[in-house]
Length: 92
Length: 398
Image 1 (cartoon, one colour):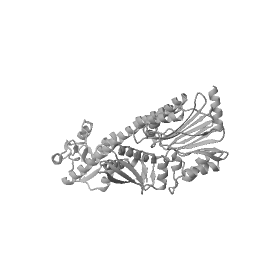
Image 2 (cartoon, chains in turn red, blue):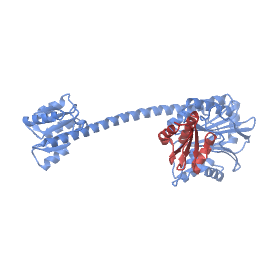
Image 3 (cartoon, helix red, strand yellow):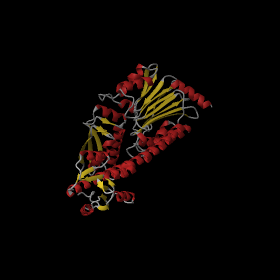
Image 4 (spheres, chains in turn green, blue):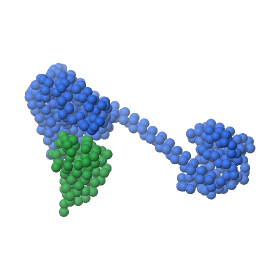
C-alpha cells in the first residue's frame, strides 16, 4: 500500500538542515509512496538546499517513491525555477 | 569524592615539619585514594621538587624549621608558575596581612590550624579536579592549534594548486572583464575564457554547490575538460555533456554545478548559449537589452546521461554590445530588511548605466546591502563583443 508522508521544511533550508532532513527522508522512505515537502515556512534555500532536494528525489526514485514540493513562497519558488528543479520534482 | 579527584594517580606532596600532623595528613589522604609524599623541612621539600615525581597538589605549612612556605613558593614558581601544581597553605596564623601576601604569591587556598580534615579533603578534591580540567583544556587547545596550523598549511597548498590550475587554463582576452568576490578563501565560482585554434571564443561561468574548498573541488575537473575540448574545437553542447558525465560519476550526489557556457562562432556569425541553473544572461546593445538567455536546463552533475539536455539557445552574432553573465550570489544578496537584490535590480542597473554595467552592478549591490563583503560567492562577467572578436582574430592569426 502506498503511503503519504509530509515533511515540513525549515525557514532556512541549507547545509545545516541536512542531518534532520536526511533522517526524515530515510524514515519516510521506509514505505513506498509520495512524500510531500511542505515549504510553507521556508523563506530561503541555497544551492546546498537544492542539492538535498535533488538527492532526496534520487533516493525516492530508487525506492519507487516520489517527492512533491508544496506551498512555496515567492522567493524560494523563483530560486527553484531558476535551477529548473520542476524538471525532475513536481512543484505544486 | 568524585572519580577524577580520587583517581589513584593523583599525587600530593605534604610539606609539614610537625611529623605527627604530616603522618596524619598522609594517612587521611591515602584513605581517600591519593598517593602522598612527605617532606618534613624546607630543604627536603626543595629536593622533592627536583625529583622525577610530578605532584598534582602541594599542602604547604607556612612555618618550616629551616625556612618558610613563602620561600618555598619562590622556588616552586621560579620554575614555571603556569605548570606548577596548586598549593594549599596551612598555618596557625590568622593574620590577614599574611593571608594576603600568600594569595598574592600565587597559592590556591589557605587553611588555618588546627585543620578540619574533612574540609581539607573537599578542597583537595575540588582543586585537583579544577587543575585536571585546566590541563585537559590546555591539552585540547594545543591539539586544536596544531590542527588549525595543519589545516591552514593544507589549505595554502590546495589554494596554490587551484589557482595554478585556473591560471593554466584561462586565457586573458581583451574585452573580457571578470569581477569575482569570494565569501571564503576558495571561491565556488569560476569564470574561464578561451579562444579556440580556429578563432572562436568560448566562455564558461560556473557556480558550484556551497562555498569554499568543497565547492572549489567540484569545479576542478570542469576546468581541464573545458580547456581541452575548446582546444579540439568541440561545440558547447558536447562540452556540457562531457562535464555533466564527469560530475555525475565523480562527485557526491548532492554536489552539482550551475553553469552558463557561451560560444561565439565567429565564421558562422552565430552565438550559442547553454544555461543550466544560472541567472539570465543579457546581451546589451545600444543601451538596451537586445536579447536574454534564461536557464533552460538543470545544473551540471544532476541528470543522468540519458536525461541530460544539451540544447543551446542560438542567435545571429553581431559585432556590437556586450554580454553580461553573473552568478546567483548577486541576486540573492539581501538588504537589512531581507529583500534580495533580485533580477529586476540587475536589469534596472545595467539599463540605467549601459556604458559601465559592471560598475553599475557593483555600486548597486553595495548600496542595496550596505556592505562590501557578501555571504555567497558573487561573479559578474562582462564580455564586450567587438573587442573580443578583434582579439579572437589576432589570436587565431598567430
